[in-house]
Length: 310
Image (cartoon, rainbow, N blue to C red; front, top):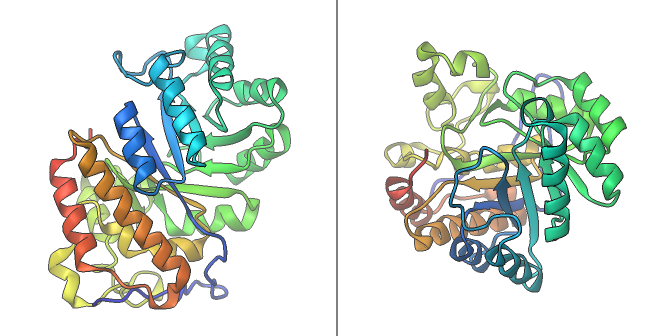
């Protein structure tokens, strides 16, 4: 069985694994997918809402299905997060306020926003609400995060789809904020410090992005040994890269991992959630001897092939 190293070697001091359990967050669009996520081990379900969200989503603000879903989550002790895709400059201030009011009325535990003005409104409207800031790839500014924390009381940064370990470590060091990364989802990568997200997004960097996001092929990155041995070289399938570097994510200070993919089958979603639940529990129990299981790779491989990562 291949083992992942939990040693986080940096240019400064060695980082040690966090004692806090990483939270498993799952994006859902329907009541059955919400139930599947909860029943297979999700700690939090995330629901998208906003003027530009796809029409026909079952879990709409104000719908009976959403009310039943939130009631089920509360019964199971699972938190509910609303990712509100709204910009007051584009959609209007009143539209943003109305969306926040609806999410709070629905029973949101957390609001994920990217508009500072609307975050201030949400904090004033319900001071006890947890506010998470959704960062764009082009706005990874420590100064901006520190300002937002002072003004709005944000507790967590929802990192962009492409981010580097160096950026993760720097945000933790300079701000102390919680961080959430995508573990399984479309166009998501955690890169070594050798490739910036800007380069990764370019045509010339796409192949390198895939390579560097997989520690099997990244044997020299950050002066670290490979996270897994050669036995898994041929098993590095789509959707598994971040699973291989789970101890490194824990060392870097990641507090939550999100599953963000849409499936034709809730069974497939359940398989992905279950794999990540088992992996997070295993990493928390003994990060220094964290071992990737063949069954995890096989299940994620099947799910990735069937998944609509759009």
